[in-house]
Image (cartoon, rainbow, N blue to C red; front, side, top):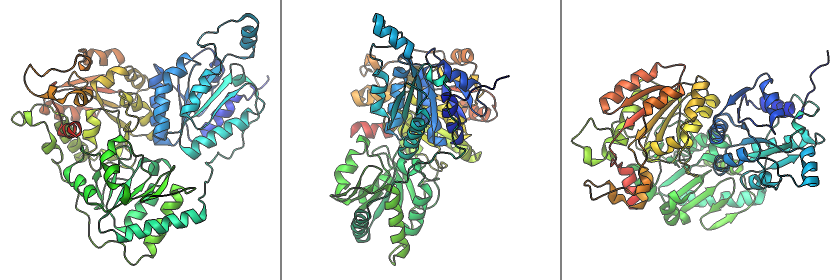
Length: 571
């Protein structure tokens, strides 16, 4: 009996398996059938069938953030276009996702040329998919033949690993099933990018002058440190220098949050007062791997001249910019300076981390101070974080957040393990958190602990079905206040004031859902909590659920407004 031929699809799957991608998220389709059939029969990689494209692509994004690389298989046109939003987020936030697709093949193209036929899922421009994805990837290819396919696949995977961003691979329909040589047994690696020596020397000299002249230096760490595997290097810099450090919201948990040097996450006015004070008083901010978004306009306007900045894309000391320097080389050179210095480590110790129940009680909505059983955003985190800490569960969970009031409140949390806070803090996508849950859990091997706005959950609620289908015991907390609160904050915050005269804008009012019926329909365990005591009871119940997802509706007043959001909206 003849052996089954080794195909282009098998080549890509073998390369992915070598890179520890053991799950591929998938939406089926006729054009991509040769790849999906190969995936179905490929040993060592699980097919994770998703219910829609955003579900699949959000999951792949979160998988890449925890595993280092991910892949999602999509149908041409109608499917790839639907996933574009998620892949754009992965591009912005540096998450290496391999987007796999297929296009009408050579036979279809001949028919189109002869008879002017518009093939299904096509705009009429068969290059449209690749053309669009060029904008949100660091490499894209349309393979019209198996010849040279292996080399092109390797180049794309190396680009994804090197730049920690998505790539796009599209084949003519038949090419995924065509024969191909097997790859070498050696896994692909990222390119080692090196700095221009003189530029590096000059940048470090200038940085060292600014650092040593400072009385209150501060390290501001970002997500690129985590993505590029530089967390251990950052920890050494913190240890050798003795300098306090903070992180961006996106970079939260770049290091395990412990020790006396971590002051808390800096999320502008959503931060706790002690973090704001340290940032405001800093006279030199060593900014490493940090994506500066418009959440940090006050910071950039007030600290620009006092910044030592090194990212994947830029190096700057004060107003002076330097070209051709890598983040890793800059950090290594800085560490060497600290090791040789007689000035560091600093003799002064950082203040200790805040202790529960702070920072939650002081930030809870004051309208409900005399109603201790009413659930607010801060009370939710006060009690859930205490439970996770008391049960020693923080090391075993990975949190996911889309953009919502809950995400900004969550940045005040302490004690998280490294790479356990996954958020859409830069791309700021509503709904990311629920779709990301399956990828975060499969990629990390930890339990996904998701806190979603009800508006965001409504966008991708079907992801609950993917979790149930794969017997993942992720927990989805839905902050059920019936409104797009984060949107209303920036439209007219007076709507949160008591009284019928203060109304929400119509477009910020959500439909009412029966979440418990929804949980049953999707095969999840449903819990509805309407008071603090019920939340504490539910947390104990959640702990022991092993083989299905849990949907928890956290019912809170429509006009509840965490003080973190009040300060952001007032800024």
